[in-house]
Length: 396
Image (cartoon, rainbow, N blue to C red; front, side, top):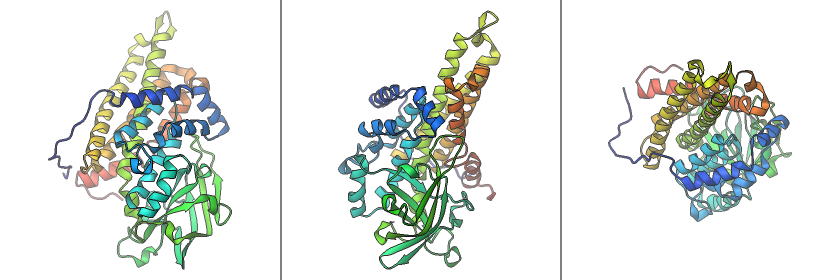
């Protein structure tokens, strides 16, 4: 096996750290109860009011350094924000993208690009919500993407298509990955891809077309078409042909952040299950007395606690600058599974009432399910663990 060596000690706090942040997020979420999210779900609408409240509180700029007008918080603190949103019954989809997508600009952008964009993103004057990577034919095989960006003087000309680009209709900027060198002309298939920061305010109607996709969950997702879209050459982030590395080095942070959302879901489901099991009386006794109700809730709780420990470990290792790919992936796997098991227990505890929209369980159940598929599927995580941690042959 090739497990990660932990020769450097790390500090991992127990208990609910960042209590002030947690309480502040809870207060904001209290103004956006289940009825708010249900109405958005029915209308397939964007949570503009919620995003505005979170922006004004400075939470969308949590990871932006203070020199650019952000809070400069550690990754764990940002994760706590997302966790509390989900634990309060909301959905952080419209907030998490701006947190981790911004990281590519911060780590690989030029000094001019960072000064131009980050302060405006931190102030809420620019929305960086769209992340254009996935394509209909390549899926998770990112090296096979077909969207092309060809240099033409002081511009790049882009042609192609992206899919599952959430919130593209509600973003001012898009982080776009495109191939600048054909795959047959590069030595390594990971080369020849470049990342761009596209100003969508100028692009839409001038070579960029956005079409909404009706989906099981309200993530305002879209497909985006590029037809000879011309963008300035200085839209390039980092070095041409090395864009995949710019994207990949933020994946651990993304997985740790998104794992907090699953953890929050598991906590919401468990709290909701326990409350109903204690209150619901059938055959002259609360249903919580029945082991058939107790055991699934208790088992899901145990899984949630174990997943949280792994998540805290991965966040602590990330903050210490230690290699954490194994643990970031394990956190994503375990929290997604814990949320799913807690959701299943909650559905079963409530019986037929779980299907009634007014209880919010079916909505949260649908939302929790997506974490087993995106932004990386549990099967791909298992493949990663098998190959890169356990030393088994590559399976794909």
